[in-house]
Image 1 (cartoon, one colour):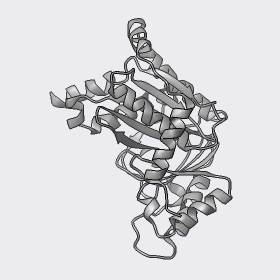
Image 2 (cartoon, one colour):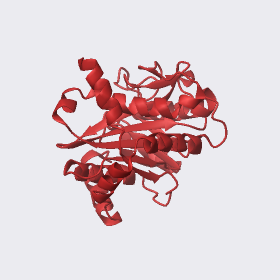
Image 3 (cartoon, rainbow, N blue to C red):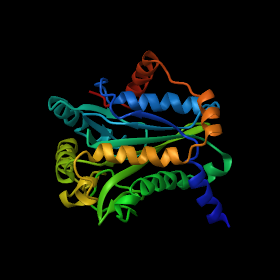
Length: 285
């Protein structure tokens, strides 16, 4: 009975979400902006605001995990990335290093906490897994869940097709709401992204051995264009598929109720939060 109830929670958590599609909003050069935006939206959801599905992309960024930021050569590796034109940041969610470009679609599910759901927090990850499964249903591909050896940002909720990872999932929990974030490599070359992450770790390790960071291999990762046959425009195709799944679970009454509780921070509020996050999680020079 408990498993059935959890499954119901997974599906129910996708009902009547508002869509915030920022995948074509590319004016903000600092990749920390969407993370700060998520942080503010999550606080509002925790106060009774409308649950959201936030979709976004960034043209050239490198997101580090907090453990990455403590590697001995992390500051030098960050400067190297910045010299190549990458916007860099240390995120406040779990996970490790992830490169972003326009082929990567980022999804944030921003939802209120419920006492029961907080006791079974893996159902939050399952909810994101279910959303991505549904979005890829028409491809006919089986989406597997479980850590992929050699992939960057490894975890129990790696999503893969044919043994090659295309998605990682992380989470950020506040007092009364939480964010489940996924990066989905829709287009581009999985091999090239793994090469960049491996080069980052080589610099960040600074020659030290036995450091706690992922050992990345080139064959571990593939985009949906490579593994699911999404072809050209894969990021746009995947984004529209996610939006269809969300819209299919919206009702007129539910949307009206959610819209009445919608709040979006102004850019200055987001920038203030960016400063707080950078001071708290940034790499010391």
